[in-house]
Image (cartoon, rainbow, N blue to C red; front, side, top):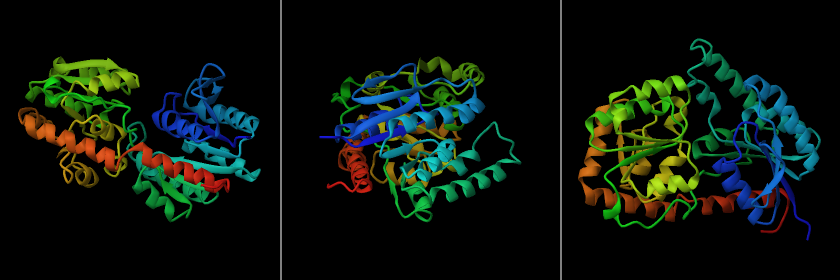
Length: 370
């Protein structure tokens, strides 16, 4: 029986991207679609039944936007897929060109980009509002043309529903058992972790400063946004309590999560963070550990209302330290919060439920029976 061809395209994200490769492409392949992924890679190959069409690594951002997009479009045409699903705002022109030749196109919106632009440290503060508003106008205009908009959060979904009625949120929740390993609480160390991209606006300075007031070890995994920031963080007094791994694979993440008692995610209050749903928050919860998170209303609603963690002012190292000390010194509370977190993942915040929405959307778009 002939399979329906679908093609995912990214010029920004790596092959290892959890949402694109490990969740969406993998789920579609298991559901019986013939899946192609156009992505930066060193060779053409098939991995986990997903056909990888490689793009070269660009020299810089300008090269990526101008040249990689052209290469991606050419490879997209070669696949002759029935559905094209792109993941980067800079690929909007590619998506429009595919629509013009009659292809079905999905725009997967990972971030609220106009608000994200306002958080970019390298942009001039006086031109940020203009760039942000200009991009929003352009994105809104283009999004009316696509067959579907997939939003990574309900907040992003609500914005695009006003523009395109074919909008659905497919949240980046963890797979039920990918990062979970049953561990007796008494075997966990009195230690904490932060796993993910390491940047100034994600609160790394405040987190390491908080370690000055806590007798623990921070297991830190991820890439620093710059060498300059890395040197600055390593010069802080709290760094002596950090065990730094660099970038790690999913197996190592699982290994770290089964050792510690708390996951920390103290993003700073920038516009793009306040209504975000960070992957790592749910991954901590899926591993059965409590979370110390930023005191954004949405995060408080998830963590504190469900007794899965403690929310703090992410700009205050002492408040972060107090929450960590509270959970590390209240073993039964931390254990209970971890149990609540795991149950919430099982009952609500899991990829298995989101996967069904994705497959239903694809089948509807191709007029296939459920």
